[in-house]
Length: 248
Image 1 (cartoon, rainbow, N blue to C red):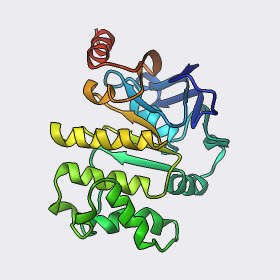
Image 2 (image 1 turned 180 degrees about the vertical axis):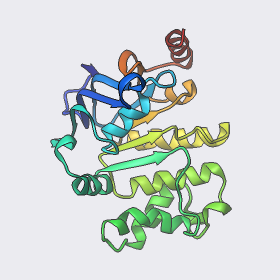
Image 3 (image 1 turned 45 degrees about the vertical axis):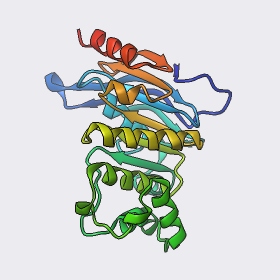
Image 4 (image 1 turned 135 degrees about the horizontal axis):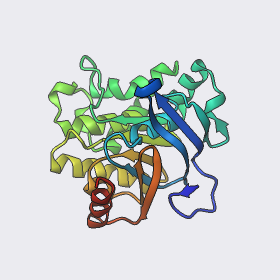
């Protein structure tokens, strides 16, 4: 079992024996092969590995976006593998946040309306202060009425972070959050993620970028659906060297 950082606290997410396959017969792919890992609360973990190593599968199963074939995923004291589809949908709206590479903002809505959407999906009428505070936290107080097409890529990603955080999730999952951004915008988003961790947020992030991974507290490396290595307080050169070694 991998614990990404030493901690005396109960894990925010605990994964045991996670297995997931796709396809059948000779085309079957074992994307996750008995993964055991804990993500301590208030930490930022980057997940890396070659293409097809199981990074996204681990992320999606841990977030309750995909079903596991075997094993268990615990969010706090809740076993995600025992929940039905409706219960998982409620959990994803209330206890989990997700940031995508493609932003996934709704083009017809303003930044404020996009941020408010998760609360409305909970059946709540958002308070104005909730939305203004969320946008202020990502440095976009003055862009509340802007639609996505009026924002830069970095600003759109910051709106997506605000949208993910507005429900105060226990864990924030990020799938290549800087993959579509230029260097300056990526740095701004990574700074924002670091500030949320310093505020106590737990982040699990899939990335292919050693610079992004080096901003995390720990990096775990996957190959062929298994965790094969980890780094604590990683540096860019260390991360790069490990990736090169995995791809040989």
